[in-house]
Image 1 (spheres, rainbow, N blue to C red):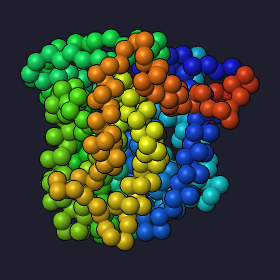
Image 2: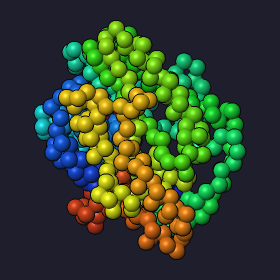
Image 3: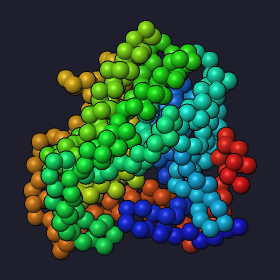
Length: 404
């Protein structure tokens, strides 16, 4: 059954996705990855959180930048009689089709990556299909909640400051209204829950499972993504509940390094640039900051999206002949251009004067809206949205009966 599919946006969520638009978005990223190939890159890559944003870009860059075999783990929904599939579902279907056409191994596992069941399915797939072990594990999970496998306890993450309330500007992206928002401080339970969801515990569990089954190659690398940002976002990000979870993530690096010591493995954190993703759109204050940042960085020809960031990560920061490039804290810094003094100085000036009336001229709010809609396959020039499409799209490596 074909139908017209239009964006239905509620707050920071779009409840529809367009299969043709998502496929075009994936195709554009694939073309960029091909143009920025890295022959010294990984060859067997497991991506946990592989269907959108940085995780999807990582899968594309590995497959089409270094011809790597990939297994992607994610939790997405196929189409039903009443709704489209999720964007990540369409992204994965398009990626797998392109990979198979290029004779590149690609299989996917759909389910709760926090669960032991999905870990076990992944382990069995690697055992059956790959020889020599995984040489890169990317942990790019972005979820608002986690059910702990051992106890069944459900943890919900929060976006709150710690210690005291926080007030600053934010924007309604679709209406263009700039207004102040006040966020109440987190409780100890909020902090604990957010650490459980967004910290490093599950990353370690994945690596431990893979290690126990002998599925990690000599010299394996594992990478998690993070963000630090400028001082103006510190109360809601670095010094808030998210920041507490990220600090837990950073501590996990040492635990994983110890786990991987006997096979000369290495755990890494990549601090990335602020970008429009489904996760960042949910954080108050951040969309307005990103709109200003995009304006400044585009004016200086320094703007990068997800695929540009990850291509640079692989080519220049992780798999270059010079070796892994880190700062004095052992972080890979992909936010190096964002955090330049000249960039942040201009952002701060614009932040101090932005309001509803001058939003369109002082920021790149139009660019933000475009990138947000593009996440769901909309507002892409090459796509004819007046044409009906079939919302039912199958992912070759996932049995259809699971979603019937």
